[in-house]
Image (tube, rainbow, N blue to C red; front, side):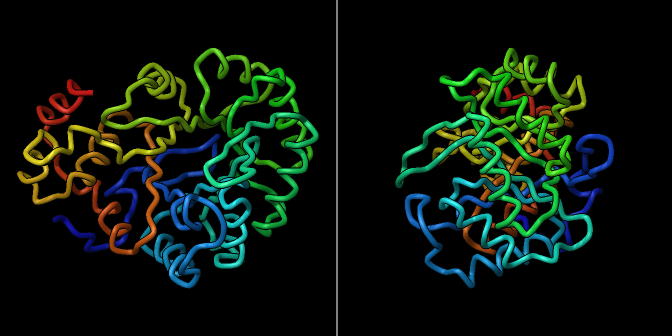
Length: 290
């Protein structure tokens, strides 16, 4: 399997710009997986989680994605306790608008008063004066989208948010939001077997919007023993996960996968993915098999 022999950098992973000034490398770190069982409560190994955060930055990751509902509040608090004062160049992205009242339960809340409280709570836990990228986690069917996005625009004008992003939205919702405030990123599910957001990926590339792919390693039947993904991985002495990430990076220059992990070993594996030299034929072959 390919291993990381040097720090992740712009040459190995490439980079993109959020807004007009925040340059980030095209492999981020999703800070969901190291909280407690069933994505609830404190991690079983807090020291290991802190070490994982430190190693991610040391190895070149400069975008960490979290949310107030991860834990809830556990992921943000751990990031603030571990990495503050933040090293220069590190971008902390968080989200608000989705609550977690119990293990495995997710309830949207896009009410303006909730989003204000959520943003203030994230600022406090992350020990920030301003959040570089604040993302609306999920549209609330009981609240007009314009009301929710309007609140984020106000928070941006007040200096609490630097850039606004959206998560789990469609193209129509993106265009409605753009009438209210500039949108620099979209975070939707996208991987080798879930291509529902093909049009969104292409739209983001055309318009200079970053596409943060969540669940980027889900390869479904493609990862079955003896399957296409395993055969391609074997050609390159790589893991199937590395090939899945390498394909995403080749899919679009707007792509910024945010794989999560709870182990340093898996982190190292993920960060070596840009080194997989997929051929044009392999990229095309993988793209034909959703």
